[in-house]
Image 1 (cartoon, one colour):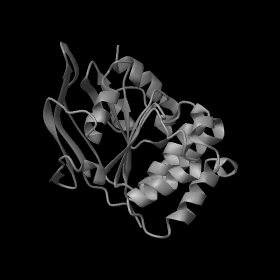
Image 2 (spheres, rainbow, N blue to C red; image 1 turned 90 degrees about the vertical axis):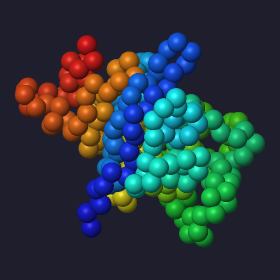
Image 3 (spheres, rainbow, N blue to C red; image 1 turned 30 degrees about the horizontal axis):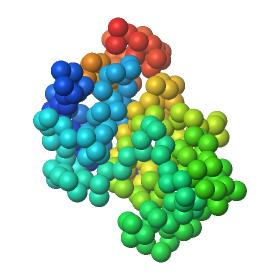
Length: 241
């Protein structure tokens, strides 16, 4: 069955300032249900600040966030999950105990264990399921966060540089997991500098520069008026000059 494409996540005129620096300025875009949106931009463009505001971890100076037509407030964690760039885990919990903690906190139905085991298998973490968080490498911590967060099945998932630190198998499996989530009608937003990966999986892109949106649409739409074979990297460099 085809995914239900509708504007699940809508960002309306988001602005965030830090002292005299405007990190995000009057930013509006949407992330449809059943699609993957790539949030792109050079360093300092405002990508991480945008995701933190959407997840409710940073208070914006202005702007509203909607999901499925409803404006989100302090309880937005029920609709939006975030996998941050820096993978922080509980040092005294094992990999599997992280999944147990999330399952009990979110009151997941009883079939979560089979799904959790499948996620660990796909990410190459089965043999590490009893390893403490304090003993995990950065890549293994990242995989633990991915498994625990995806387990929840939040209707909107935000990922900030999720490929950094992952080995090639982990990157491939994460792309596969994101495509599965897309097929399950999740609104997925991925912030990344890996443009080739973004080009492979994204349906639409939003390119930020100095906290503002300078381009938005499908890659074909961004190519409109130019050479049809241009890569996303070529488009990105041209747009952000």
